[in-house]
Length: 431
Image (cartoon, rainbow, N blue to C red; front, side):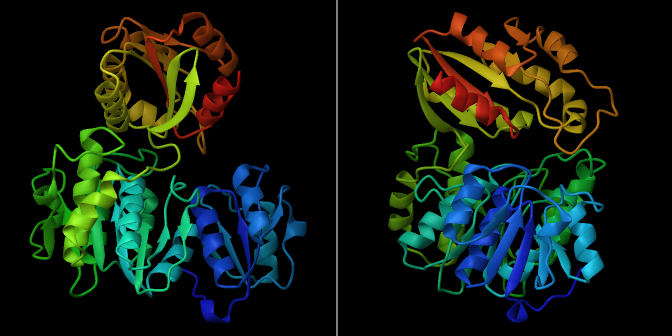
């Protein structure tokens, strides 16, 4: 890890400034009165907002964006080492850190509450932010989405508390030294990096051992996948002691009640008022792209959700079934990365049964090449065993045409995926 003393840094450049995590760090440094610039491949609502907040944003990525006065470069891991700006920064001797290294630099000096887990990190982090805010604990928070309450992924606080997401990809969360570590759950994920579930568990075990002296781990202690992670540890709180299946939340589903249980366990550890915590959770408004209601179209409610793992799809579709028991669920899924699709192929096929009509779009490749040869067309065919109303649709345009011909007010539509499918949801609503 590159050693940089932040107190001596006044000028920072971000490569990939429009990312949801990166933009939160940008907002942190802007709040700290640093000069911030950054680049991204194309303008977006996030880059436009950052420019309005004081960042200098380049919508073309080139070596010319790197000037001699830059004292630190923060880059997203999606960037290739031979990216023009990274090459230029190295040539000038500018220290470079990835997003997660920078997050550790920012968060570790605080009393750090880190939220890790395969699913539910964003929602739990946002819940905790609302809880600590309502309790007047004034936390500094970095959320992996935009809070519906504030339309921002960053909260500037003045207290000792920081609340952040801790992502397991490439063991990046090991840059964090938590005082309170929340582990929502653990499954096999990120097949392009981890060999198997045991490899994932090993990463979480290492993080658990990094919890500061006197700190605690909050998790479901009866979850078999968690047992190798917490084995022999005595500083563990079981969040299932705070689980309430009847807790009225605006976001439906057992998974959200489990997220709420984890947040309540942290709040109890920090001695926050229990009744106030419950009242805050009842009013929790959610985050961008997590069971986000987009409006009505042809009489059907439309939702947009980040779900891109079978467990996440199951949770979202289950939540829809709870909320709309008398409607037909029309699910449109854009699977994220070839490696995930290949490694969880059978699970993706089985989950189609949770919807009345299930459509697969082409896979969103993100950072990958299709080295496995996995085919979403073949997945759609395999899925017919579980849901005869499963189809493959090759383009966004064809998807909208199909919906125009089939959707009625008896349906509810949900768009599922971590890639560009959110644009399709917006396009449908505006059509």
